[in-house]
Image (cartoon, rainbow, N blue to C red; front, side, top):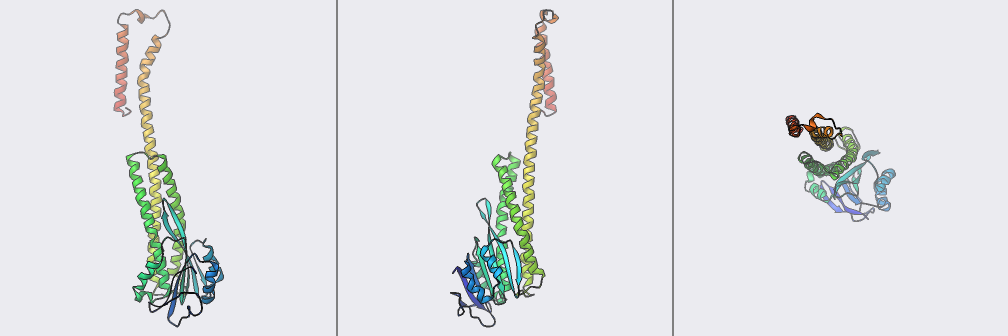
Length: 322
């Protein structure tokens, strides 16, 4: 059995541990609820829980397949919530899935591909029995808040890289690998934003709608989670804008550099055109050219070339072409 942790609680305190899935271990009295955590279970693993807690077959199928976008389904007096986890895998964002079966006397979490366990969260909640005694809806809030809080380090890590890249853009020109990294980050943030949108909708429904298993006094807690995910979504949009600005700034600086080089080449070409033109005239094979037999002709021509070249050079310097 893929059970990581499973306990029965009363008034926010542990009553006994669930060591196996059978009628005796899952027997509960009024006022008790079970919190069962599973990791990558098989269909057989969930069959006992399906029979005991009357889980809907479609929800069980979704929890096994683990290829769902965030969503909230209502099955009678129970809720089925799909949340997507995220974590950094080197230079990319990796995704997992956490499925939550929520009923009046139980909450079952099924994790797939998540890099963070719920054990620390469970210990944190158990340290505050006054909150944990609210039951499965408060645990649902805590798990969703735990998942959403895991988004922020991802955004902060990408933000540090983007800001460093922005500074390098101002100090020097981006190389090919850095430009490729910009497009990779934009693609990763677009995928991340497609996860955040449905997650925001799920939490908004928990906050604004009357749903089974969700008490009115717990709903404000979901509003806090909603604020967190909206903050993350805003940061993601800001990062996408910054990445676009970095690329545009790099392109403009490159165009400016190319324009400066082009102006320099044009200026030097104009200066060199003067002696080239004069030398071309005197290079023509004509016998009758008055200047050829002039005693000071060579010195005058060289001086004229020098004066014209210096004049052009000074004009280009004042125009900041050189």
